[in-house]
Image (cartoon, rainbow, N blue to C red; front, side, top):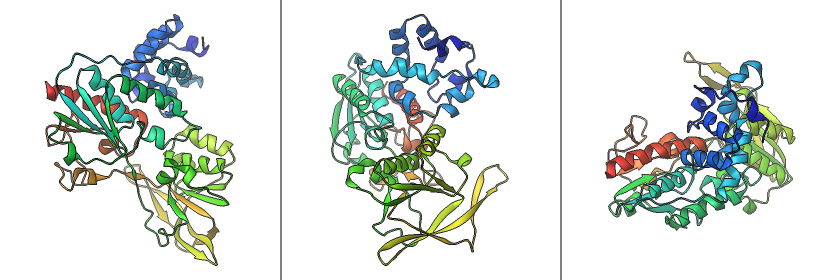
Length: 402
């Protein structure tokens, strides 16, 4: 038994659970674990979060459970995630989903990433038939085609794939599908795709072949045999995954970010691990142009300063007259991602002023049979947030189909 469990106070109003996106009942699971009822603890965690064996590996604990433990007051928070890993990772190898009594209803789920996997499991448990679509040939989404192997062993994703197929989920992969193609062929549709379009820096020279998207690079890194000096632009999780992958390819890799390390949106653990691996961070700097001189790519970089707005958020001011040149071989751009609205086929349900499709509290669009979860609803967020959004959407779908 992990000795960390004996330090847990089993709080009645657990801050760690409240801070968790899926509100994991940490005290209940911890109590079962301490009593040696590990299988029961594993089933409890899986029932609440079918991706428990995944999220316990890739979550940002400092911003969630660990960071909100009541024992932080004494600077000795309980490392719950270690215990969840001990419970949930082995359970993936034996977990199964028992389909509910058939309802005669079918739901199409577009996207086989974290949100789509979660929704498919919950819908099968409710007795609905599920058709799961994805442009990739296998189930997993970002878990398989985005998060590097050194952060997430793909054998765990294989287990999720097995669970779905054994539960009778019909997987249709290997080609993109539009909402128009499935709408009307099923009783409900859940759009659960990820943010798979890379945002541009909008600078001169960005179209040069020496500049590549982090999303494309992480999807199939073996297609990019990088060498020499690599610049990674960005401060999120994708940027951290990209810089650490390039480092493992033997590249001299540096991260450039327009804010400070403290303001990076990436998981704090990933930032620390990247630094521990010897990857330097050039903060408060941003490329403003890319040129090629005598065959050598050069980034024109300027310094930045962060300005606090009235609402407390930060804006970045690029400082004129601070240009300096940074030679490189490959620039990997990871400055955020967006969803591909072409999936809607040019006709959208109701949208807000920003152009985002609007939903009600049940994740239901203005088209009653169409629901949304994951990045299409939240923007590019974390795996555990995608899981929670899928749970909300499934509740809406179940109510609609009744």
